[in-house]
Image 1 (spheres, rainbow, N blue to C red):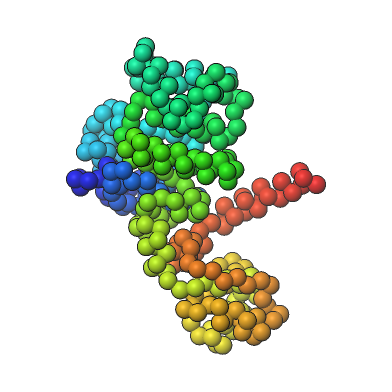
Image 2 (image 1 turned 180 degrees about the horizontal axis):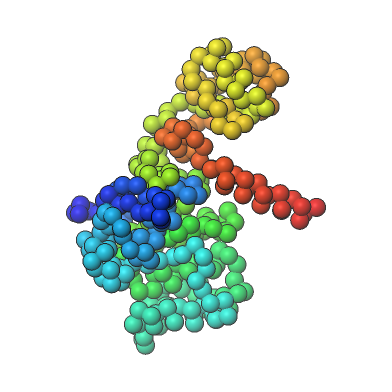
Length: 327
């Protein structure tokens, strides 16, 4: 294991029957990092979270946490890990303080030590005035902070979070990241989190991007975007194949189709927007110009958009239900 690595993953493969969820995945996480595991639904990040949190056994490969083998030294690893699950793990009928007290008992904490530990975490996470509140009365953002306090109660050195922003509004997401940085800074904790949110992944120190079980990119968000480099023109159209052929003939380069969108990378996109609209007035529904994003990185590495077709349909279905409900 690398001397400065808090977590090291080497040649990890995991299968569910005939389906390969992780395919020879490997990377290391430095001590004190906030490390993101980014991927669309079905990318493999949930399986990796389950392996890291010792919920399922390793099949192939090695995972080490603080120098301890996760397969052979499972109990020792668990004592070093704090886990925050995507699904709520709080008892809504208990108060904040009661939830934390029961969590402490599971780790053998009691008496003055437990009381002081709860006081410290509630103060650091600005929850002291919520100690006696029933969890069911709290907002989603406050509940997430209680989950974080619960995961930190036994003073872990590595904190693992599964989709921590799920169900949170933008303001609560911003607050959550403030608390994650506080935990890293004041407790010197290494943080690993899974996410399918591109804007959340931008906030990590480094990223591992997974797609269909494979590690397709690994670096800081800035360095990953720099690998794409060019401006990106995105065009919505009802005739993507015709537009790709026409743009290739007229402007050269490699325009690419993704569903009903055509994307085109160029060194000077600002000068091409107007000529494209003028050249294909009946085919361009909308056109946008942007700097490289993590989705552009994902497309460059995989050849397809970040959201799978199934996820896009699910999203559309959810939005449709909301619109119907609103009307």
